[in-house]
Amino acid sequence: MREGIHPEYRKVVFLDTSSDYKFLSGSTKSSSETIEWEDGNTYPLIRVEISSASHPFYTGKQKADKAGGRVDRFKKKYNLS
Image (tube, rainbow, N blue to C red; front, side, top):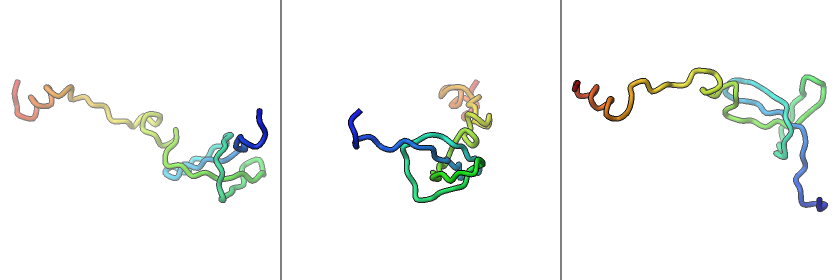
């Protein structure tokens, strides 16, 4: 690999702001915020809005469209059989 053209790859902590879930992973993202992790080391902190702890698909709280397609919804709306 050529020197000086690749971003620095390091361990960072991602914090899901909606559920306060934290996980340690490798990334090239950088941040001025830091946090002390469970292993006693300090890592850069990256705040994210959604992760597997808060995403509806992973939590099982997703909405399922059980009304059917457009025609079924139209018929239900206007009481057609």
